[in-house]
Image (tube, rainbow, N blue to C red; front, side):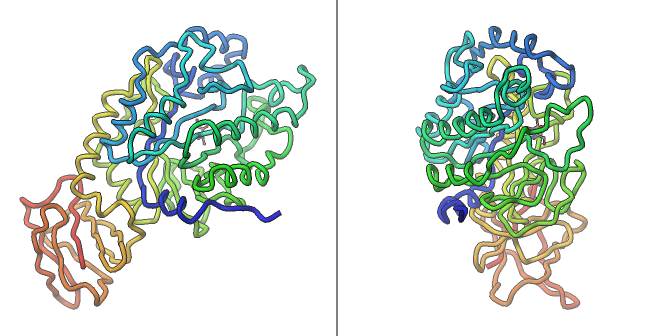
Length: 409
Ligand code: FHN
């Protein structure tokens, strides 16, 4: 079987988007101790299920989340349709363990997809955990008498629902299959009962949603049909999280990252990254041909934490002035000691991220470049040369404390 891939149009628009919002939201949000709370605290299935009758996020407003993403300059959002806890956050016909069977009764994925459809600048994407700590055909085949094929029918059936019920989807984001993970007595139930039949699954998506890219967070070499190579909590080439030992394989890339240290809301986690650090990560991603999918973990009431919303809005303010250097660009070729660059054709954008001195040195400037200017405001800069090296001087009062962009054309 020849595997399909995403359409050229879909891949281009995904890459052009560069910045997305990741949303981890589910029953675990009620406990406020991260999305792995069921596993870390060894909460039995029957006890965890008792969270469902408590789920009623009265302050959830899909248009507000969509408009925050838009204010941040994000072009797509990816929300957990079902995380490892097995609870479906949409009105699936394939399980009763779902959000529409809680007091909330509403379908947040449908509301978010509709909120995106009302705008022109945002598309929805869906996170799907292939690992399921709850499903009887994944974890409890012996007791339930179900077969692995029953789980596959559920997984593939849910993906079909997500492909057909929510309009245009930007991406499918799979998680929970970590081929290099060591198993022991605490996590033996993570092991799949057979193949996930990715070939069939990916062809289903590429047929029903030809413009949707497929990302599978396998922490391993991408398989045929996967359109994007992912990096979790690290830039390509870095490995602070321990997952990212891989080479890059020439595919478009996406980096996903938490704002603090957890994906799902954690009330004791105040280790929020600064706006500057988050923005620099976005800029560095763009300079490496990678998208940046920045996570928020909303509360069980349906609020995105104000501290996260604030950082998103600050990034958005910077993007409103400097977005030309981030959207629809590709990896840069000009180099600079204290920053990075992006490029669109013969136009180069150099991001001065840290100032060691007045001069911003520019190396590998192609001959096509005749002038330099500040992207913010358009003021011309003299393109000078000393000792065979090009440089510009950016006056202190013109520097952006977050990142200054020099346009070369
Ligand atoms: O276990 C998940 C985790 O909860 C979260 O969803 C992240 C997002 O990249 N992925 C897994 C860890 O690799």
